[in-house]
Length: 225
Image (cartoon, rainbow, N blue to C red; front, side, top):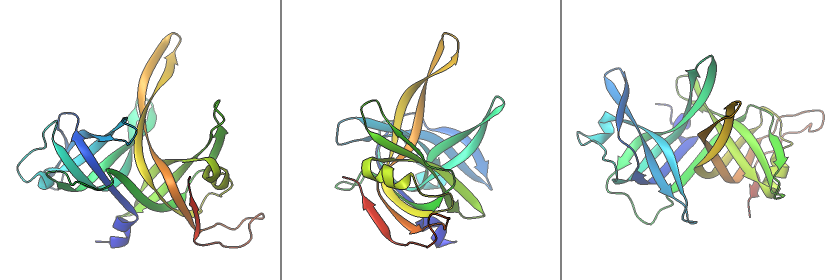
């Protein structure tokens, strides 16, 4: 087991199983199931996050809708073909399921270390809030990678927008879900859900040299306020 590939993507969620547990596929005799977990925010709002769990973690006792659990694992991605397009799917992948749920811990925590693989997109909302979207490639065992959409705010958004593709960065924050409306045809609007990594702290581990930045910088920490 490559432990570096496990430590660069660490997720912990504590909440309620929010949907039926459904079998999806089997790999080398191991069965995998999908459900979702509802995690409360301090604001009172909730995030409902897809969850993939192995039968080996349930130990003969399937997860029940409404059950309170703590899930530790990774935030993973895979491509799914929808029509003639490829769609990035995101899920919490369980490596451990703790029952009953742990108390007194952060209910939604994600730490990742990876590489910026797409030029950051900076924008200002109609309410004058600064946001920057970053797609981070996080290496996984067996030469695979997870592509995680990250969102940064305010001063950190201004900073990260100038980072180049290939920059290595560590990020901490939480997984969030949000609903949005998408027009798919004239007069047809579809409600969809997006999942993303809301970052509250990041550190540049290694900056890519360019004509504007001809030196390498390490351990640059920025904390959101």
